[in-house]
Image (tube, each protein chain N blue to C red):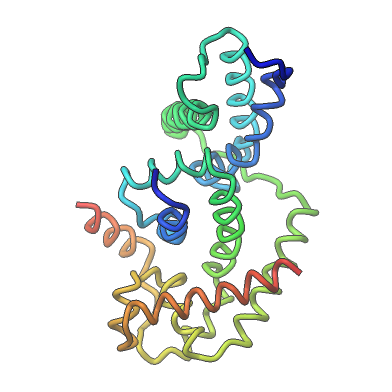
Length: 85
Length: 165
C-alpha cells in the first residue's frame, strides 16, 4: 500500500483537476479509507477554493510581471483536454 | 467469533457521511441543490445492502462505499444530462450561516495572502489562480520546481494556521 506522503502530494492536483482519470480514481478510493488524507484534503479544498476566487490573488497577478492576464475558461479547458491526450 | 457487539450498519455507514458528501459535492458542484439528496440516497442504499448481506466484508467498508458513491454519481450525471436538454436548473439558495462562515474564512485567507512577500504571492497566483503546473511556474519565475513546492507549502501552512484559529 502506498504511503500517506504519496497521496498528500496528489491533493493539489486533484483539487485543480490535473490528475489523470486512473490516478484520480485511485486517489478517491484512498481518501474513502484514509481519514488522515481526507482531513487534509477537506481542509486544503476550502483554501484552494478561496484562492481561486476572483479578488483574493488578483492583486498578486497585477503585481506579477512575469505573466499576462488569465486565459479564458475556454482556453484553459482546451489546454486541459490537450494535456489528457 | 468475536464477543464484541458489532455496531449497527447505520452507525458504521454514517461515519462516512463527510467523505461521501465531499466526493458528491466535488463531482456535482457545491452549488448543486441536489447534492444532499444524492448523499442521503447513497447512505440509504449502503445500509440496505449491508442489511441484505450484499456486503460480505471482502473489501473494506470504505471501498464498498466508494464504489456505491461513484456509481450513483455516474447515474445522476447521466440522468441530469438527459433532463438538462429540456429544462434549465433553478438557482440554489445558499445557507446564510454557511455563507457567513465561508466569507469569514475567505477574509482570513485574504489577509494572510496580502501579508505575504511578493515571491510567495506570485507563486500562489501562478499555481492556484492561473493553474500552471509546478514546472511551468518554475520556468516562469526562473526558479527550481522544488523551490516552487517550498513556497507553496510555506504559504499554505501560514494560511492553514490562520484559518484554524
